[in-house]
Amino acid sequence: MSSSAWARGVVVRKGGTSSQLTSRSGSAAPQPTSTSSTTYGGGVKDPSGRVIEYYAEDDQCPVCKSDRYLNPKLRLLVSACYHKMCESCIDRLFTLGPAPCPICNKTLRKIAFTPQTFEDLGVEKEVAVRRRMAREFNRHPEDFTDLRAYNDYLETVEDITFNLINDVDVAKTEARITALRAENAALTELNIQRDEQAASFLRQEEERERQEREERARDLRRQEEEEREEHERHRMDIINNLERGTGDAAKIVAKANAVKQKRTSARNISSIPAIRQPPGGGRPTKASVIPDEPHVPLTDSYYAYEDKFTLKSDYHDPRSEAVRKDRDGIMRAGGYRIEEAWERAIRIAVAGLEISPL
Image 1: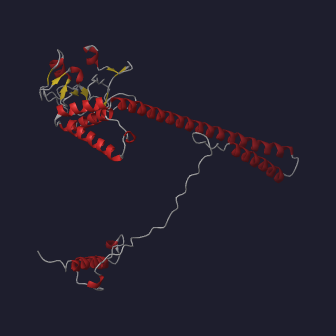
Image 2 (image 1 turned 45 degrees about the vertical axis):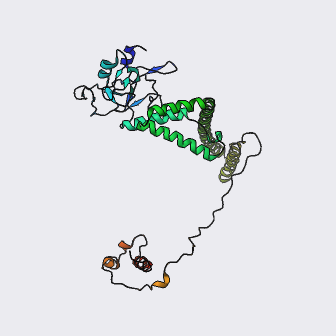
Image 3 (image 1 turned 120 degrees about the horizontal axis):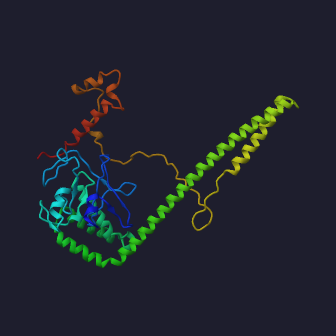
C-alpha cells in the first residue's frame, strides 16, 4: 500500500474494500486509521465494521509534546510496544524504514501503528493479547479426555496470557506458543472450522428469527386491515337492512352481529400458527413443569448457649434509648427489634466465657 493512501487514512480490508475511521468525538473531520497487521492489532468496531477510535481533548504526543491546542488535527496512534505517537512523529521517524521506538528502543515499523480504541493502553494491550490467545488456543472441552486436563490447558493459556500482558519472559513465552501451535496445528484448524460453522449457524438462526418477526408483523397488519374491513362491512350491512325495512330493527342488528361473530371465529381459527416440529421430525416435546416446592427454613440443630442466659424485658442501654422512644417506628423500619440486638450481644458475651485468656 502506498504511503499516500496511509496518510489519507484508507483502511484496506481482506475483501479489498476501503473505508475511513470514525472518531468517538463525533467530529466531521476524517480520521485515518492504520493498516496494521500486527498480532496486537484490531480494536473495537462499530456495526458497519469501522474502527471506533478513542479521542480526548487533552491528548498530547509524548515525543514532540504537541497537543490539540497547537494542532487541532492531532491524531495519536499506538505502536506494537503500546506507546503513543502523533502522525507527524511517525512520518518523521519511520518513513525511511524500521527504527527504534523513542520511548523504549524497540524496533518498530510505520505500518505497525494502530488507532487507540481504549483510554487505558493497558486495557488496549490486554484485549489485543486475549484476542490473539483466542485464535491461537481454541481447543474445546470435548477435545480432552477429562475435565482435569481441560482445566490444566486453560491454566496454561492463562499463564501465557499473563506473561504477554506483563512482559514476563516474552522470548520464552513466544517459543512456548510456537511449540504449542505446532503441536496442535491440526486440531486448531479443525476448531476454527467448527467455530465458523457455529457462527454461520447462529447468523442463519438470527436471520430466520428476523424473517419470522417480519412475517408476524405483516400478518398482524393484514389482520388489523381485515378487521377494519369486516367492521365497515358489518356496519354497512346493518344500515342497508334497516333502510329496506324488511323486519324488526333489533332482529336485524342481532342477526348481523351473529354473522360477524361467526366470521371472526373462523378467522381466529385459521390464524392459529402451526406447531413447529423439532429437528429430525417426531412429535414436539412438552415443556417440563418444575414443581414449586415450599421453602423450608434453616432447621440445623446447633448450640446457641440458651442455657447460659435469660433474656430480660428491659436493660440499661443508653445507646438504644432513642430507638425505644421512637413512637412512630421510623428507627425500627425493616423489622428491627431492639430485643434481638440485646439477645445477640448477650449470646456473644456468654459464648466467650469458656475461652481461656491469652
